[in-house]
Amino acid sequence: MGSGRMVAVYGAYGHTGRFVVARLRERGFVPVLSGRDAEKLKALAAGSGEEVRPASVGDPASLDAALAGAAAVVNAAGPFAVTAAPVIEAALRAGIPYVDVAAEIEANADTFAHFADRARAAGAVVVPAMAFYGGLGDLLATAAMGDWTAADEAHVAYGLSGWHPTAGTRAAGAVSRQRRDGRRVRHTGGRLEYRDDDPPTLEWPFPDPMGRRAVIGEFTMADVVTLPSHLDIPEVRTYMTVEAARDLSSPDTPEPAPADELGRSDQTFVVDVVVRRGGAERRATATGRDIYAVTAPLVVEAVDRILTGRTRTAGVASAGEIFDAPDFLRALSPHISLDPRP
Image (tube, rainbow, N blue to C red):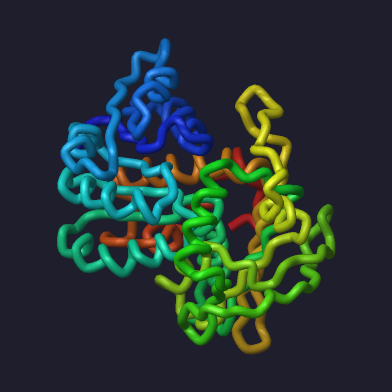
């Protein structure tokens, strides 16, 4: 087993990986910087004294060396269709928890399908999609469910002021489109369904100050994997504001630019979650800044809770299943605002 406060970060020099490394430092962890590009790792480590361990997902021995002595590993390197399985395998060999920030629907589904039995048998912890997409929505939906053991439907609406995608986001999206043969996906009747038609456009009543906005309906994100993995909800829908969807689809949209001393962009977001059962409805909403930067406190809070035994299960589990969702959300209060407070 890994010991102490050392946490390996695979993909440490990527856009999200840098936020994760910085947050680990703030929380008193010792990041071990890993990834494919040795020169980028050295540049990131310059002046910090942090250990650099280059590794390739095609070289299991290099991954084993990267994880040696670590207490946990965070995988921040996409596309996760390529990186998730090899890094999970290395984590299982090392006997340490694995957490990733995958937003790719198929990659997350693969993690549940391929590793659930092995991880459970080993008493290992594997948490996919512990990020803005997949993780935050799952925590909000779980908190909103409260004492409900089942619901008819869940809706996760993303209100983004804009979306300047990183190169990693674009690469992951290209892999997902290729795996789907260009089709779109939704979750209905308790399963994923692939479709060739265009998604609907409708309006979503976001809370003030955003208000009612046009959204792309069935703009499907990782929540369609994380929520149904542990919540009895046959219909799960996700939505995206039209402006953000256009930004993502345009090849001319630049990458996010830092706008403060922490490196965050000026993007703001609202994640509005509604669960319905019969004629009853429950809601939970989070607001904040920079979807990539806010992934870091989500990931690092997860690592801290895993390493201090504040978990509810083992095996492959989403955020809402493995953690106390209301308590976890309260811990994020410096980074997001919640309505209602859980």
